[in-house]
Amino acid sequence: MDSLIAASARALAAGDALGALKRVALRDDPPALALRGIAMAQLGEHPRARELLRRAARGFGAHEELARARCVVAEAEVALAMRDLGGSPRALAAASATLESRADRANALQARLIAVRRLLLLGRLDEAAAELARLDARGLPPSLAAVAELTAAELALRSLRTGPAQAALARAHEAAERAGVPALLAEVAEARAAFDRPAARRLFAGGEQALRIDEVAALMASGALVVDACRRGLRAGATWRPLARRPVLFALARALAEAWPRDVDRETLIACAFGTRHPDESHRARLRVEVGRLRALVAALASVEATAQGFVLRPRDARDVVVLAPPIDGDQASLAALLSDGAPWSTSALALALGASQRTVQRALVELEAAGRVRSIGRARAQRWLSPPLAGFTTILLLPAALPLE
Image (tube, one colour):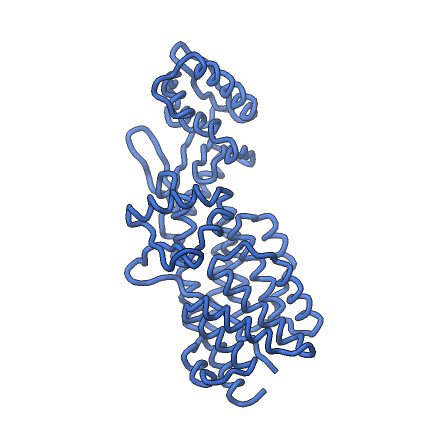
């Protein structure tokens, strides 16, 4: 490795993208292209970064398998930053295996961390937890140790385990301080600030209460019957009944929970579940069928009893009933949550993460854009969506390893 390449790699490892570019900006050999690509990614020029990394990978010969694998890892992280989640993870897995076989442990771990972060973005928490448990971050550079702890903290937060999340963030902050990378310190600070922001709203008669993430976790552990509109399901203690794929049943459960301990008349339930204000006998018959399905699904948690006017929710074991709603209400809440990290998302990636059609996501994005809650950049296939910056700042893309090239 020549002196300019070595100096550029050291600058990237310290988070100095401009300093790295100054040393290799005029060079077109594969090592220089790879480092230029990583530097452009740190500066937010993701399409250009991907192009440079692909050129670098093509430029390395068949005997330079290790260097090509490092380029694949860097390109995978750029794709993650662009929220391009539609590609196959096989190339990343193959690159990780190559790096492991060549004793490049740091970059192999980075490849596996990228795979875990992809699973987190797709909401596949069990798979992400299993992959993360297999990682061994001992003896690694502080920057990678910090990213591993940030990933563990995000997984714990999504599982509402606030204690482990705070402990992981404390370890991430310590590692970031040892690394001395400003972007990494900012990433940790942003993650810690999430504990002070509203994570959900508790709805009750006549008002609502904003809750932090630790208050949400305490509420979930209280034993109350929680109708969770954030995750679309019902929870009581350790029992969870998912209703994300059964929107009619969830609409009925939420309407009954919001009225608890009073009953809800049949016309109101029909309007909530079926979206009509002029019910007929077919709607009433369908309501009876859906209420029967809801009864069977939540029998261990509560009963749904008929009254003269409609139906009423009766929780088991004298539990309280709580309705938990997202901090932003409406059909676009899930989109706004995904876009809140400040990174640009493609429509196809949003559809994949939400499990919805691209057309449905496009309609919701148009409505959010009209309300000034999202903005788009680019056109056609290059179009990306992101949230408006808060106070002029957005989340910083972090490529923590400089992928040194011998």
